Image (tube, rainbow, N blue to C red; front, side):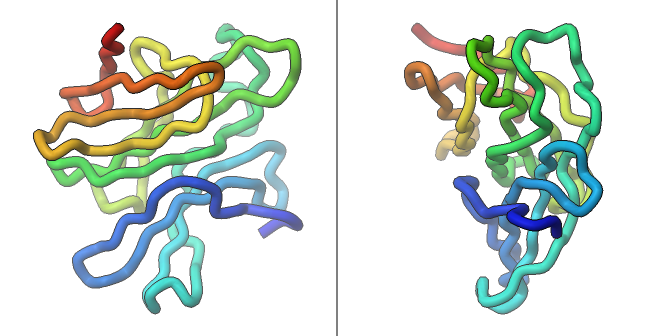
Length: 166
């Protein structure tokens, strides 16, 4: 790891059936030009953590046509979906001011977090920071995020599209 990162920040952890725990992190590894999101794994109830997989890293802005300053991927939230996939939603907005917010990005894993799809902007775009994913008892997915404001869109297709109720 590079000096000062990656860090555990806010994303919830997932406990696997064998007792291992997966936790999202973000920051830079040696040689990175911007932030990446990754998964660390603990096999000893959180006493020690080891790099497990990179969720997303793009040295260059994958969508330079979008508004806002690209900083890489940060503030990941992961969840285990009812269909067995994992979903990660993350921020890509830098802290440049004044700025417009970039959309949150999403990617999916079919192998409990070892490999991930290429991240794509949320549809429709959820513009802001600090996402937190939550699967509701009925299988509907919520993504709580905010600043400015507080927003809770819902997805019935495992995070591929979102509906904001007003």
